[in-house]
Image (cartoon, rainbow, N blue to C red; front, side, top):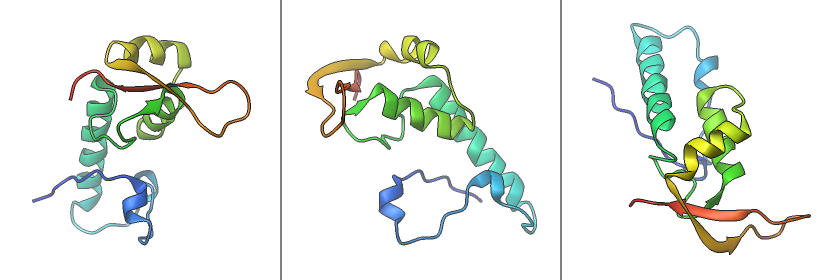
Length: 112
């Protein structure tokens, strides 16, 4: 029996992590279990903005795009991604802090 748990990277800072694509030479069907977990995670992120709430309550679209690109394993197009996600998000009155140039608008999830 396998169980998938998705947590923010900061919560496992004391652990050595290996990207799923770099895991090799596993016994039994463990490689298949990891592949199924990655497929499940990717499917949920294709449908929802941040179902595991890895970014916290507020985030920029660029932060969300980077998260989705990391999970997808490929760089996603900014314009298409923005159009796909905006219906699931609500703009806040907050802006990104501590950046050079124009600060990005922060968003939150429209539901929950």
